[in-house]
Image (tube, rainbow, N blue to C red; front, side, top):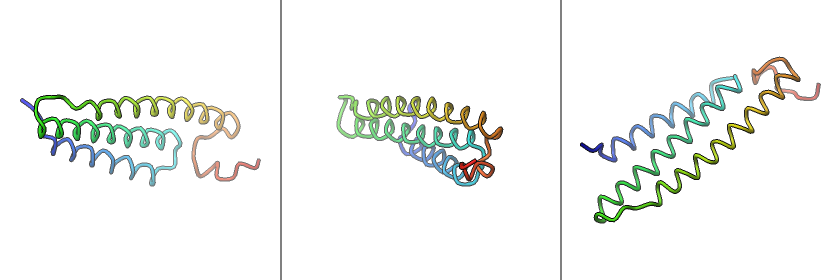
Length: 108
């Protein structure tokens, strides 16, 4: 049994919307980073669903462009997580908080 690409696109859109809402509404740096990861995973689902849809439409030869783009996005997400968490640790050591409201001015 196979999941139709339209359902995968719908799930990706829902995940992206949740991530975007969290990114704009939350004030905790760690939650904002998790929302960015959620949006990147939604993009991965979109790449994979489009690849599957292209494969189904054009015959049995598998299209590898979607999975290759997904691997690049996973690598970028890993780098973003490492750099983001390093910045969170440095910010916490300096300001004793990870709230974006409390660190609005970084002059102190």
